[in-house]
Length: 292
Image 1: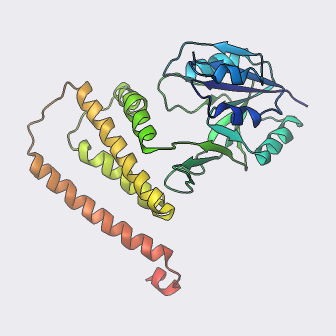
Image 2: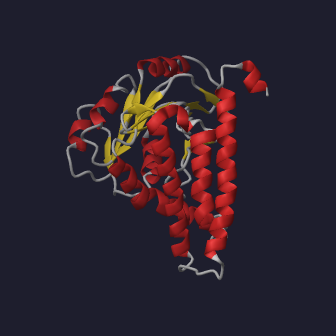
């Protein structure tokens, strides 16, 4: 049976880290990266592993995760965050892989996001596949921005069972991470990719995100949670735009903003009406109505 190393990178997670560590006790080794926590995170972690490495708290936490991957000695590595849990079903699926000779370099694992106390089954948050299990020396993060997916050298399979992710617990937590970490990183990443500033994006970016989340990704099926999260993600993209504007030295284009808004409003009204009709039709139990 192949050996499994679990790599966890955490900062001030004393309220969540115990449950995370409990869920991976089956592993042969736990590599714990403490990002200079000031609470009891490290004390709790020492009850589960002696392989604890203290690193500088860097918003680009992927650098510390990569460090953890290098320290791992297992044949396979499972990357996990402090607010994530390995279910008993997922544990069995991982153990089945460890018993075999597998040609794949890694596996995508679906992630069940619990946001504001509810499992979000739609709105773009499920199945939320993440590459988390991979062979030693086959995977790492590029370390270019915060929201990165782990890059694996080789073919990747897909697991059936979920990682349970206890994501945002409050609106304040969502807004804090959005303003302080994620939007800043995303704006800089867009500029690095050659983004060309357009004033119309102040309207298009948030509206497009809302339509995608609420209609295309069936956010309305998540009820109030889906509506609020779609609006919050629209606001997220508006903040990204404002930070792009700031990076462009608050560029003031000579455009008629009233006319610009009017044009975008017409397009948006048409799109919303189309999606409402489309979703009502597709969700109808009457086959004749769906057809016509």
